[in-house]
Image 1: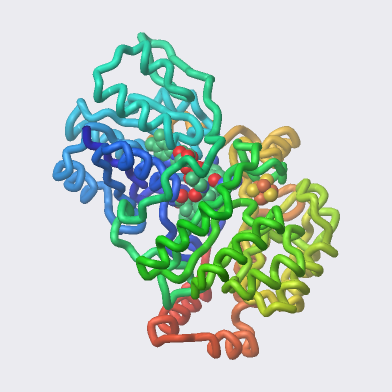
Image 2: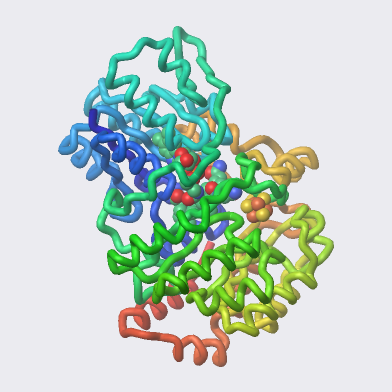
Length: 475
Ligand code: B12
Ligand code: SF4
């Protein structure tokens, strides 16, 4: 059996805030979830291919040709709620090429709307949650022509059965992450994945842990149990990539640095193995220490991306962020001590956040000398506490996500994103967001400092194009 895994074209991705525009500017990142599934399939001898349409710039029409050429038996499509129109157009096209190709959905939208996902036309199966093993089980069951009773036993599977929905609720997330094969990057298409922060070299996204037990009100983390790969296993992956010539890594985990001893141990292993690399990670603000950053710097740590959201203590509390403003200053002080670049992710339009607070956030973002800052309009996502609150308070008049999720193809053109407008109206939020970007990046002193870090003509060109696009950011 041949398997094709698809990250669908982004021709109809829902526009939320400025994020679609900003994502294009931020870089190109691989679908690591699909890579894990593909690596498990490959290690079981199952022929597998990944097509990453947004990265490969593949349209629906071109994708049809790729599918006809590869002739897969099973196609898995990864989902976000914002990409569901394209997901279902893909499924429609697949079935019109050959009705016998089995279609499977999984990923983030499925976490939020499992039953709706399984009810869509042209979808044969849905696998809820981490499908590293369940996808393989499904492929093997279909390959061996197993009975429906065997398929029903696959953890987290949902499918239509005689006008009803069959749901297997036995799903549990992967416990032993070391038991998974190390992602086989040769399965990814030959695309240069990169981040705008390091345009002169490719960036490799690594996931060293899964799950987050925190409950920030704007975020949906269905897997609450934190699980980490062993430090040796993570460094083994780096060594293997290093031997293939890669030297720039980004840990995309939600909580990479949550245990300082992990950061220390990984750094020690990088040093012991004499790996001349640069790397960065995403972090919760209060998760770094002097000790962990001192050694990480020696091991090539270059940059940390912090989820700040706002400097305002009260708004942080309302978001259930569980950090204090003083924690932000402390973490920034540590980074500055060890000359670690910082990226601050800020939100605009959070519950309780006034215009003055946003202006103050911008001022402090500059004053505290973040190397880079991202400003996002707060978009209440499905299954988040903030979305539930907005519905309850009638700030958002109806469950617009569910309306869209029920029929993503027909609802696409009617879709209107609702924001959290209790304190600041939509237009003002957009204006503040544009203003924050321009005010942060177009400071003469800042531009001079950045220019000094440019390493190649290509990098300069990318920065100039990004700056022009930022300058003309409009809604
Ligand atoms: C890296 C990342 C990105 C990257 C890369 C995305 C990608 N293609 O994987 C980039 C920067 C591009 C990105 C973009 C966005 N992201 Co994002 N991102 C993440 C992040 C931090 C990690 C994802 C990851 O690699 N996880 C590790 C891997 C191993 O797990 P996984 O991806 O979940 O895959 C497993 C399962 O989901 C499942 N699975 C996945 N695909 C498939 C497919 C099939 C067929 C099957 C059966 C199973 C399956 O099995 C996989 C293996 O276990 C998550 C947060 C998180 N912790 O998951 C947010 C997250 C996924 N992103 C989110 C959002 C909202 C977005 C954006 C919409 C942001 C925006 N406002 O524009 C965009 C949408 C992208 C698009 N296509 O338009 C939300 C999703 C909410 C939702 N309901 O859709 C998350 C959960 C963050 C959050 N907590 O709110 N993102
Ligand atoms: S924002 Fe980060 S810490 Fe908070 S719930 Fe989401 S992943 Fe966890």
